[in-house]
Image (cartoon, rainbow, N blue to C red):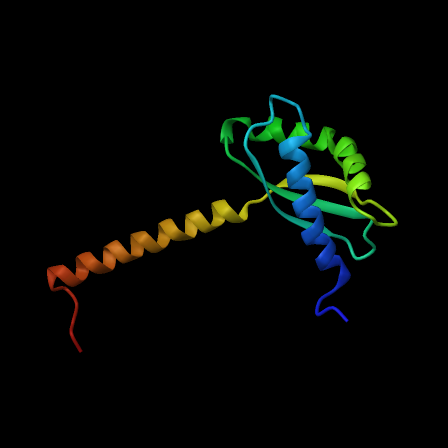
Length: 127
């Protein structure tokens, strides 16, 4: 028996395959550098939300529209590569976690710089 649910294993498989299809099969020149960061498949394996990170922020919305309009093509390619009873409907969304992590890093850096400046000025009480 596998240590985790089937939907989790399917998430990993679909993430790899979708990334491969976008890189090598999707021939739209408007699609820039796209990274598939994750896939969340519903428990019934009928729907999948594909999280992507898009390098160029200026083309983010356009790239997302292209990916969503290409979902049928990508789903067809998945059907040829993956043996599943049902190939899930694909919905592409922007992965906000990378930007959220960068925001947290920036806040932590600001806190560290404030702490260091207080420690160097002698404002801190050594107790």
